[in-house]
Image (cartoon, rainbow, N blue to C red; front, top):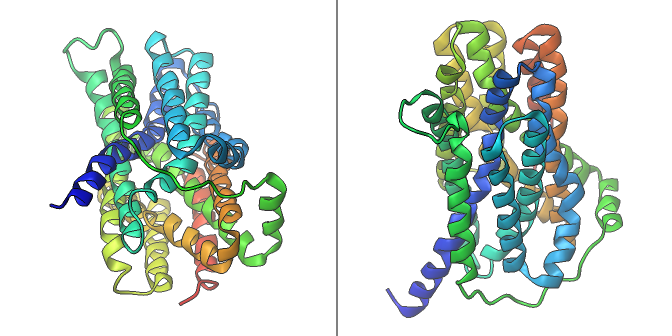
Length: 387
């Protein structure tokens, strides 16, 4: 290994640890189920937690781009990790409704900062044709943190070993320690950044919604994130409602989703080199459509598990394909497009709220029906993709 490769590797490892920390946001799915059980909340009340996390993407994505141009990408990532650390610290002191609202708000703000700044930071280390595969690998690392969260929470809730009285909340200090390591390691790693791009504002981003294809992409991102957060939150509830499982047993459903999403991220980078983005996108959406039909028509455990796995695999590459299609449609507006697509993560707020009200009214079938609307939209969007 030459000196350049060694230097790149020494800078790449702490950045990949930050991608792992980016995955902490997905603990909100299983955590909201435990908070619901602890506090006796309804589905609509419990679904406020994941909705709150993704609300902050609407507020902070474009301002983070402006901040990044002023203080640099690395410092913005470090700031995001500090905010994430604070969000993970709060639940150690209890799981009251207001405390968890504050925790999840900070988690959302930290993740909005991180999502906006970490991908551009990686481009300072890896460039050219290797950047796309490196970004995909970063999503793979992120997914590891996502599917570990339910197992750690379940271990804390069920093991007789001392967990400092935290139970399932042992998840928070464990991830908090990793956040501290990421801050120290990245802070000590020299990364040279190019001169920042010209900052864009809200007006520059919102004007782009006047383009029909950009608007389609924006809503597509909202649907992708809504299905992602919705499945993360609802999968355990489906098992509890239909199969009579306890929350600890049903937590496996969230991990199953993220296991197949991880497989999808890893395999997607290979498959996309062989087939067109449009064909792979269609296959992905058809996987999710089959899953929705399965969840709405069958209570068999094998069908439920298969459906959750199909959603995980199908939804794994939707964001990257929509994001790249949006950038390709207006390459001269890269900054504005990027900010707008990150704002689309606000879909993680809209869908859980609608699913919470629907499930209160019609059980988990109502929540699945809301996700099915998002899948149908993505099927329509497929027809607009370039071959």
